[in-house]
Amino acid sequence: MARNKHPEETVRRILEISSQLFYKKGFEKTSIQDIVNALGMSKGAIYHHFKSKEEILERIGDTFKGEEEWYHRILNDHSLTGLQKLYYFFYYALSNEEKQHRDQLYLLNIRDPQVIAMSLENSMNTASVYLSAFLEEGRRDGSMSVKHPYETAQVLLLLCNFWLNPAMQKDGRENYREKLCVMKEITDGLGVPFIDERLLDLFVCYYDRLAAVRSEKGMPE
Image (cartoon, rainbow, N blue to C red; front, side, top):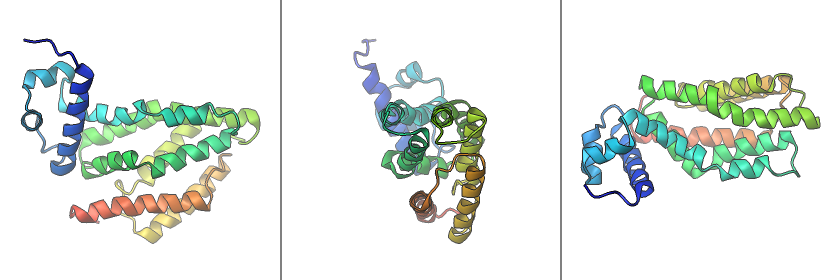
């Protein structure tokens, strides 16, 4: 067998095609053979890079984290306080088009236990480390009065990724807005007052985009 001289390109293609299939057919209904057929490569070539389609899905989620130059730009911007960095982190996450596509992919597969487990694990073990860096800096510079940065970061992610996630609950738009107001009260009370009207509006726009996908795909409200 000829040696693959461009493994990075092969991995990129596998992730791209798999993402499209998961979006169209759903994760559970997409088989490795479907991915093989769409790519026009051997099953062995795929298994050389990924042990299972679950690992492919996990890497799709990791790709967004791996391309987070924006995160490091925010983190290393010494003109911003920790509170401002936290704000811009959420602003970017709620408005970035690639992030929206990834969230839509998870929305369409939200009933799959594997998807839920991976989302929870990422929130608790990976994304919380990112957020806690901002909270710790905010505590040092005085822009936030948070007492437990890492644990508070985990709470924020649980609230955003599950309690406030339109894919995880069936609240109407008005009820969703009410939950956002409660979210603001909670975060203010935790000493991380980063939510303002502009961010509230972005959360609602985020809700509207995912609700549109739910409607387009005929998913129950």
